[in-house]
Length: 468
Image 1 (cartoon, rainbow, N blue to C red):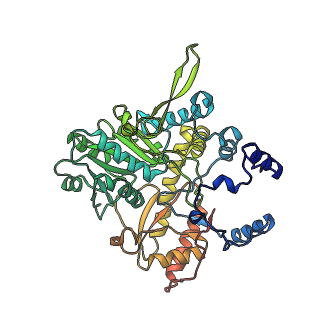
Image 2 (image 1 turned 120 degrees about the vertical axis):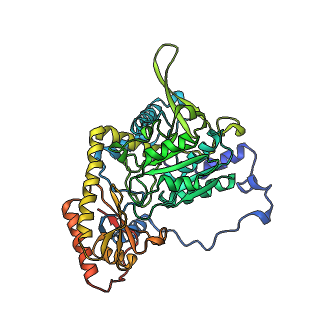
Image 3 (image 1 turned 90 degrees about the horizontal axis):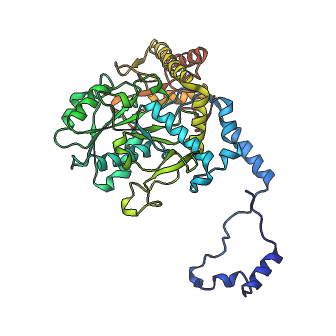
């Protein structure tokens, strides 16, 4: 909506109406020593033409690179219709359904989104999104503590094979609430956590265990075995999943005998571009028995007195809608626009389209790993089954290799040295359906050339390349 300023005549008329001589008189109760002085250090503003020229100059510094980077954000094909529809005025301007009776279109779309996510995850209930996957995990942990009344320990087992960003975010959010996040080390040979390792850390009273599938390394965890053990010991199970990949993997609602209790993750793979870091949105699903512990909003379908179908805000367990002491969380704005894009994306792709995409990711990763491990100085770090991400160990400095690859127009992967120093010079490579055989061959050729050069180039490259 454009800003339309008042004219000087209108301002004078308004001041005269309320009996005030000037705008300054409206703030005369504020002591002079509290008023901010004139901001003299701010430079003169640029014209629209100058700003446009500057931004084009900066954009021209971007380079186009083949992207083999994953680690929680994935470059997938998004049909052109997705964002053309999403940015129509009917969706683009519909912020959030505070007045449910006047927001039927927004509520219906949200209801369809919840239905699709519940079907994907095989869970009973989905809410209307969270900030992102990391905050969604934190909220899932808080849910588990409230829901598992048989446990008094507030102790959560979380494998180190879970996304490190998710773990750090969860720690930041829950540490002030006397919740103990107990890290469980992964097996160095398979890249996954074993039931025995879980048991070693899980002695005594445990509230919940977190499992990521595929885990951060792209490896597949023994989720059925661990889920059954947890439930046999009155431990809730929290799943962290990639919503695209569970179209071909067993969904969390079907892990073990009775499925997980809570499922979360990031919806970015469903129609959201990489976008230099967002915005994305978090998924959060649970069993029906835990629905009262779920934060955020849930949209429901009903009929009015005339029997006409309508959509309503069924559950809003946050402090804005109910007494503060009864709120499950103060999490507020959901990522409604990205949720809209995901709903349209899933409707356009259909179940078969999503399955084909996931299968192509898997096939491309196998091809890439085959090509790269045929090069001297490159080997797989883990023997476990992987999906569309794989950890590779190099004989030379990983950061230098990635810089050299970038100089050749390739985003070669994620450097694991900071988060997992025990892996040595390791990188994680990712493929999606966007990578062709020619792209994979180009990466393998570039890697061969970089390693054969002996001295890896440290040439500076743009920090934020554009991916293609």
